[in-house]
Length: 226
Image (cartoon, rainbow, N blue to C red; front, side, top):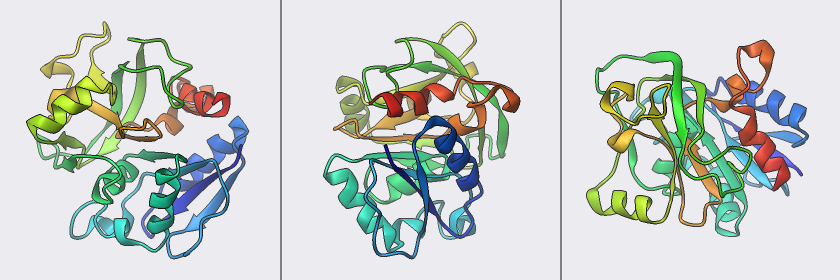
């Protein structure tokens, strides 16, 4: 299985993603955002960071980079796309995922570990998790407050497009466990076809024991198995 990591000016998790993909056997290629062509790959990763310095709006400028036309075509054909943190913001701005990421509720940058509950493990991104499993994964963002309208939220819930929700150590989804004010404690969502996943937490930062945890590794193991 082959993968590509898109690199934008301001990306800072692209090498982290490359390292984990290589260790998992997903054969990554680094692709500059200004490229017009995407290599033939199975998976595209849009990494975290601060593309274009988060000017205008997080992810808004990166969503119009030349390579994003190819990423959209890749997703349209059923190819898998994973957007992490700023990558999630870019995917919403590009229209690959519904909703938007707003400023955190308390208007502060958050950098710590959070608990997540796996809401749908019947996908190429989550099959190595158990349904309802509670995992610990780091977050590092200022604009991670997921929001959408009521009709779209209902669609996400009805179609099982919610991948992860913020929860406490016991798996309880409540306001106290919500680090940024996200609607319905949403930490990650799929598109309708379940071949695109956007998530604010960083699975690549908890994919090896030396990094302090391995709960994020199942995302990449799931992709390899798929």
